[in-house]
Image (cartoon, rainbow, N blue to C red):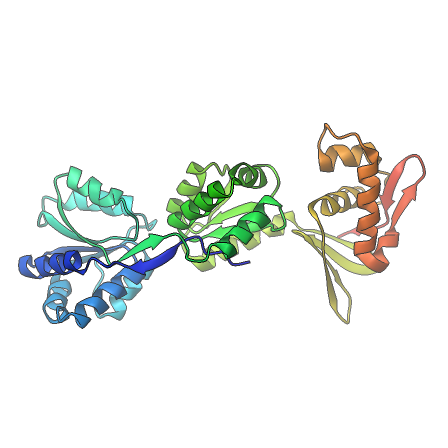
Length: 344
């Protein structure tokens, strides 16, 4: 599922952008911070379309370029600019600390291409340290024009019909929970993330910090803030959760909400509900052993549930979902259920 929670729009205040760019050219600013790849490309494109690139580019060529992360660095290099330094963890806080350390050796004015947020803590921190800044604001983040895809994703998390959500920026996390607040779903989201097994995956530490500030207690994050590394981190996490077994002579795997059955000819995927998956996992953990209805209620529904009919109905649905393999779940009269599987 894809649910954008923010939109990126060009700023309409061209007078401010023009003034900042002309000031950089006039003062030949010696240090320039590029925080985003999109913002870097948009700024240079805007400068070219407004006849300012011929004056701006020589200044940038001679300036000390600091790129916050790999996207900003890549945009700079693609434009023909050299990058003097990038922070190890790709955070603006590292950039601020680095500039404060260098302030005795460098000019006191720093140009900062900022992201789309209304408030810029990095710029504020530099100003507080006595470093004059020229903010370059090219775009802004706003709520999505069509919030329905994001709302469908939020509903899916609340209903626990997805296994995980990836977040690629702190503003996207903020937008996600802002939309959830409007829909009255924040408590259910946090319950899904913190108690019901939906995994939150963040691309980096800034994104993770925002998720934690919103109330998410556990976040999967790669060692390096890269999209590919984020995917690998989630794959490694999910690999620890998978359960492999043989049922009816066929290889099977419980992975997230799916049960995959593999034979020589094909792979069949069965999508289970949260309760169905919980019951199947409880039975598979004890191959051949009888699991009582009360044990299933305690493990899958929680300690307070006592209606054994819930277990009976869920087992019946699970058998139907598993098709020809459903017969492997045996009812032991007045005792419970057991499944004939071989763990792998």
